[in-house]
Each structure stands twice: as structure tokens, then as C-alpha cells.
Image (cartoon, rainbow, N blue to C red; front, side, top):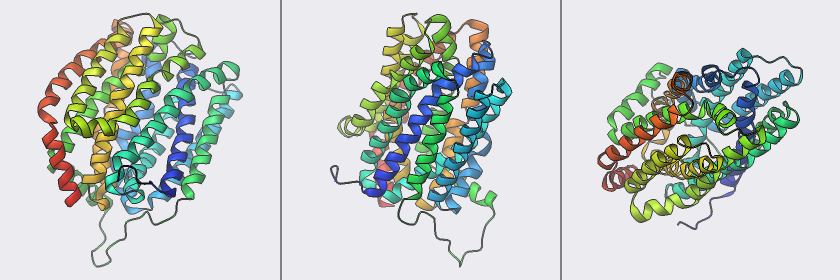
Length: 410
């Protein structure tokens, strides 16, 4: 089954994701570069990531419930159409010189709101497109394409475009969302949950509560969500001020900053293509432990030097554990969680996993301002050492295999 074709619908989703992530990679570089033309205060620059991630804390739960109520394809199309309009408007404001930090915060927040809907729907959609036995293969290729476009191809393009005309990266991102929306619209099939007319309709808050109860009762996924929350908190703390780190400590240009970010894609691509096979060979639990240990080394390499090549090597090393974790845990959730609850439980999971990112942005800004731009990287190193050691007990091979088999049979 590992070599079985994934189907035309999957190809459409894969292409749509790759294109929109290319635009995201362009914007990922351009938005912080635009921010540092307005301020060099680490806390204010970190405010961009705070605004972008805050919707996950505020709207993740209702977004998941709506995804389970609505056609998941339609949700994704509307979300990307909205993001097209947002980015086109920002491009016009940049072109006419009408930007400010407040404007950037508002647009980052708007993109984050659409992302809560789109990402919840996308993960809930995947089990409708491929067989459960092919989820690792499908997610691995999807994540590899997403991160390669987002981190390898997009960032250097974004840096060069921003240096040429500051509005161009945002126009490119708007176009990528428009093409992605069209491709998702062309998916064939039914992607909504049929409602049981014999059961009385429930309120949104009751449906949200059902998702909360389900995840609370599943210890393994609950622990994974808590882990991702800590990981995302520290990742956001580091990368929310990374543009200042690159410009002030590594002395990189706009184009150099884009190339630095693209180095992470090397590890991401390898992780996306190999993590499924690695997990099958040594087990998911051991793969998670190795990934956490490598992450600690990566953050130490990035924080302890002023050599951009060593920092790039650390970023490349970080790409593998990030992708491996995503492939293993996303596939497990898609296999374990009942389809009718997939949007809601994923939203609770992501509230725990991504709701910490605003805290990370505040932490990164505070540490960068009070103790220097290296401080978040040192803190991340220490946290990941602890997480790796505790993971040996929380995420054993046997626990992950038992959970997957229960999901497959249930």
C-alpha cells in the first residue's frame, strides 16, 4: 500500500498547498522586513507574530466546530479568497506608503483568523481524500512540499522582491491564495458531515464541549498537544525577533535574510520524505525523542554564534524534527479521531498547541529587549533538553502503536 497512488483529488490539494505556501514563504520574509523599516524595538517587531498567532487562542474552538458543520472544501475556498483580498489590500497600502505598525498588526491578525478556519478544514479533509493506511505517505509529501515552498523557495524570492519593490511580495502572496482557492474549488466529492435528522440539533457550544471532552479523555494526544504548545511557544519566541538577530548580529541584507530562512527547508524536505520510513523502522516514539534532541542542538547552534553559515546549519538541522513531528502526529490524529469530530478535536488540540504562540511572541520580545537577541535561543535549548528526556516516558513506541491500532479498528 505504501506505493499506492494517492489520487487526483490529493494532487489538487497538494498543488494548492504548495502554491499558497510559496506565497506564505515570500510574505514570511517581507512582513518582518517591512516591520523593521518602522521600528527596531524587539518587542514591537515581535508584535507581528503576536497578532498573527492570537486568533489561534481566540477562535480555534469555534473554527473547529464550524468545520465539522460545514463543507470543508467550501471553508477552505472562502478562507483563501478572504486572504487574497487581505494581501492585495496590504500590497496597495505598501505601494502608496500608508503603512504603520498598527496596520501590520491588523493585517497579521486578519490572516491568522482565516488560517484558523483553513488549517482546521485542511487537516479534517485529508482522511476523505486518501486511505488511512496512506496517511503518513500523503502527509509526508504534503508537508515536504509545503515547507520546501514556504522555507526554501519562498524566502529568497521574498527578500529579493522586497529589496526591489516593497509591495511585490504581498502581491505575489495574494496571487498564490487566489490560485490555491481555485484548485481546492475543483476537488470532486462530498466533504461535509451528513447530519442525523433523528437527533435534535445542538448549539455550537455543545459541539465544542464534545470535542473538549474527547481530547481530555485521550491522554496520549493531550500530552502531545501540551508538548507542541511548549515547542511552539519557544519557536515563536526565537523567530519573532529573528529578523533583528539576522540584521544586527549576523549583519545580513534583506536578500541574505531570505536565504538564511530558506536553509531550514533542507532539513524539512528530508524530514517530509523520510520521517514516515524512519518512524516505521525505529518507531514513532524514538523518532520523536531524536527530533527533540536535535532541536536542542539546533537552537544552541543558532544562538551561540555570529557566523551566518553556522546559524544556517542550525536552521537546516531544525527542519528535520519539525517536519517529522508534524508527519507522525498529524497522521495519528487523522487516524484516531472519529471523522465527525475531526474538526472540533483538532481545534482543541491546536488551541493547546498554537494558543501558546502569542505568549512566545511576548516572551521573545521581552527577552530580546531585556537580555539580548541570543537569550530566546538559549532558553529554547534548555527547554528542549528537558522535553526530550521526559518524552522517553510519555511517548514510547508501544504507546503510539497501541493508539494507532485502536484508531484504525475503532
